[in-house]
Each structure stands twice: as C-alpha cells, then as structure tokens.
Amino acid sequence: MHFKEKIENQIKKKERKISEILSSRLCRSFIALIIIIGTSSIILQSFDTKNEYLTSFQTISFFCAFIFTIEYILRVISAPADYPHKHSFKARFTYIISFMGIIDFFSILPFTIIYHPTIHDYKEIVELGKIFIIFKTFRYTTSYRVIKQVISTVKYELFVAFSMSIIIISFCAILMYYIEREAQPEAFSNIGEGFWWAIITFTSVGYGDVYPITTVGKIIASIMATIGVMTLSLPTAIISGSFVEYLQNHKNHKKDSPDSNFNS
Image (tube, rainbow, N blue to C red; front, side, top):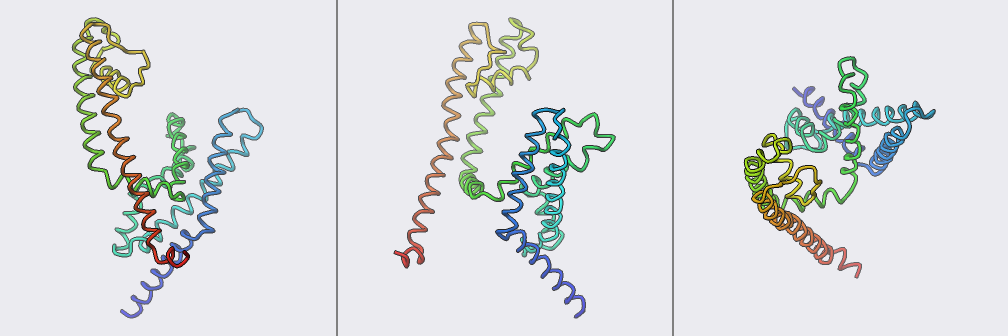
C-alpha cells in the first residue's frame, strides 16, 4: 500500500511539474510564437499554389502542428493538476471537452488526417479546421478572460434576448413564406428560404437576393427590419453595460488593494 501511494505521489508531482511548465512565461511565449508562425504559413500558402516556397510553408505548418500535438498531449496528462478536486480520468475528460480543449484538438486534427485516403473527397472541409489555430490565442490573451467573465455575468439576459430574436425570426420567416410563395415561388420555394430572408432582414444586412414584392410582404419586411434594429441593440447594450461595470470594479479593486495603497 505504501509503495502504491508513493507511485501516486510521484505521478501527481510530475503532473504538477508539467502544468507549471505549460503555465510558465517562457512556454506561453513560445507557444504564442508558434501560433503566429503557423497562422502566417497557412495564410502565405493561399497566395499561390505554384509558389516555389509552398513546400516550405507546408513543412512549417506541420512542424507547428507537431508542437501543438505535444502541447495537447501534455495538457491531457497534466489535467489532474489543473483540476485537483476531480479524479484523474474526470479531470482529463473535463479538459478534453472544455472550450480550449476542443480548440486544441481541432487545431491539430486537420494535419493528422489530411492525407488519409478516406478524407480525400472532404479535403477542403478538413483544411478549414486549420483556422482553429487562431483561436488558440485566447489562452494567451487577457481580453478572452475578460470577455468570458463579462458574458458569464449576463448570460441569462443574453439568453432572453437571443430567444426573443429566434422567435421573431421564425414567425416572420414562416409568415413570409406563405405570403410570397405564390408571387415568387423561386425566391420562397420553402420555409428555409424564408429563414434566409428573415435573418438578412432582421440583421439589416439586406443582400437583395431575396425580398418581398407583394404589398403585405413589404409591410411585414418594414416592420421586421425596424424590430430587428431595436432587438439587436439589446445584446450590445447588455454586454457594453456589463463590460463597463467589470472594468470599473476592476479599477476600484486595484485602487483599494494594499499594494496600491503602499505604493502611493
């Protein structure tokens, strides 16, 4: 029993050590640099497929993916140190299904399966996964943590606002389909087309590819566009208010902290 506990303590010590290394300033700066290099190589590959440096850019991309793969494996291994109150298996599973865990996984997935024979027909779709590398920067920026904190404090209000928007869009999409389907069957061939019209109208984008031509349809579109402007301003106002409140509280906290009083 004593030997088993000794082994477990050694494992936990190694997990903490790995976690400390991943959290260190040097490691974070290195990974951030690799993210910039990997993203840059992906962008440069798109300019000219016959570029003489294309192979070099692809090699750089795969090298970056190799680093990200090592990072992902180390984060899975050290997850129990990051979630000390959970069992080792649950801690690792928690990281894997977390937002950043999913980002880390999908940022390396395209590079590991892109050349598999069964993926050839879906190669372009798989390559889209490379853009997840950009989202890895969330871990290394304070702005992500601030936005996450702000949104978490107003998630109920945002849920109400988005729910109301979905209800209005759904109602108008179905209504417009039944009003316009006889006047322009090609534009409103199904309710799905109605949803497309409702979304671009509600968001005030107005691409002009689908629009009502009947009098009743035009009246509904005018009302919906007006409601859309007012409704979409709600989430913006909610997030802005919460953001200002967070910054004010953060400023007051720094002002009232002992260190700040000591320095003054």
